[in-house]
Image (cartoon, rainbow, N blue to C red; front, side, top):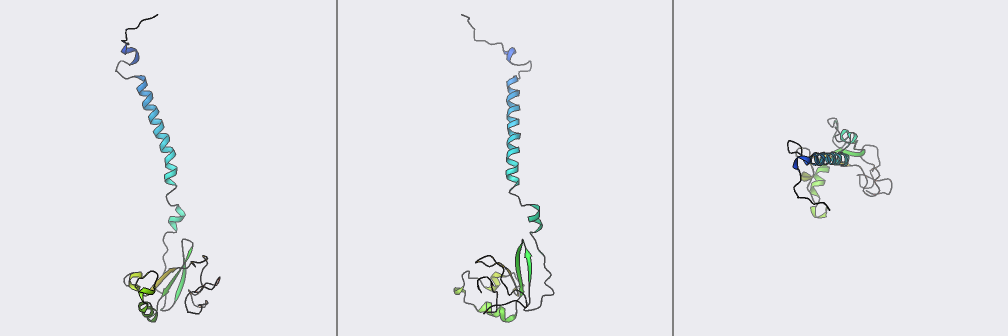
Length: 157
């Protein structure tokens, strides 16, 4: 049986400068694993960013200078219809006269609009029942019994 003294030759395991080959292999393996982890995580994180077509549709500018009092227009924002209406003084007075306790989301007209633009009503033109587009946003469309927006699919006002 062979006997050992327990004193290994340090120069056989390490180089002349004291660096072991195993240290280099460990550093290379950890570096490769880090690069691989970044390569796997990058697509997962980058897919959460909005695409270029969504960024291009994120703003819509309308020229409302030609919009007369009582007139409305339709626009498209992110593939959804938007109704813009220049309110009359009677419509503004009627909106201010509504009892806030009767509203589901109690807000005055001043709280629902930007300062200086209380005469403009901007709403998404999508029916909350079935997702269709109501009528009554522009002149010549059916306004329903109450003179407002009217959904032709199921008669909602």
